[in-house]
Image 1 (cartoon, one colour):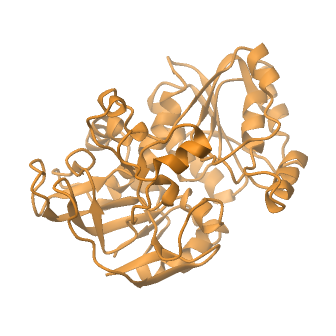
Image 2 (cartoon, rainbow, N blue to C red):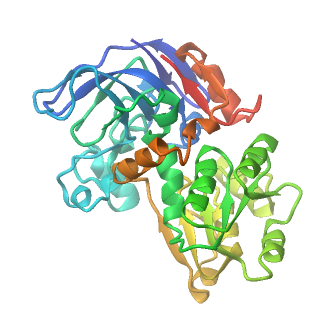
Length: 389
């Protein structure tokens, strides 16, 4: 089959790899009908994610048609249309039973390496390095889905692929970001990053009762899309974000702040972001947490900081003095996608949101390597890429 594979920093290729096969009774094989390039895939593209191996198949936003099921699968049959969560979860361990599917204890075969870095291992993920299981990803013609009786959700209502594909990751992630804010109605939510996850966080915050959303970015197309959803916007290259938010909230700060950027904040945003970039380039630091610092400073006393941007290692100079003295609450996670799927599919079916709004580029797998660069460089108005194998 054809698939997108990683061969080093800025080196994604479309090449022929072996077809996946059933390896366990709880496996399924799907023919991929749509997949997407995620913002977190760009961390792989930029060489920020450890333990990638040359030839690894990438991608974790995938849906398609069931072609084969293992003997232990009774809830899926050949021909079913399914969306596949990026988190691989057993459904039986302590964390899965409690709805924390992305903390699954059983699905990361390389859990010992993850434990050395993070203390405990999260669930395995599709296409996201051998520190998280080394599972081949879904930017391919076919995908093996382990624990297929737990993860995939069937699409039985005639919705188009593009309306439901993002249930695999970015819609649940953006929704979780807003859900973590504990909204009760009439709040002001500030969101850093107007990429795909940020766009879903904006719309989810409004769905959950926020009165105002302040969206921070610098890419004109992203800011325009945020305004279409009703957000007020700040361009971090032309405005002092802290001062603007102070003025917009009469000095109180935002009720909740969402970091939808993560480890690769723009190195030109401020002096501290330039220092972060220098540290990362000289191996004196692992992440660039400028956005997290700014979100803490902009959050009101006893507010919430919700973190869904990906961080991988150790963060420098986080203003914990500000956080503890002002009573901030931090909530963060890799998204337990399965927990949110039924509610979010229902919202799509009711017409509350059409997730396809975020798509700007559609192409085949062969165009994938070039579109990684287009997406990373924010060229050609690129906000979200969907590939049709």
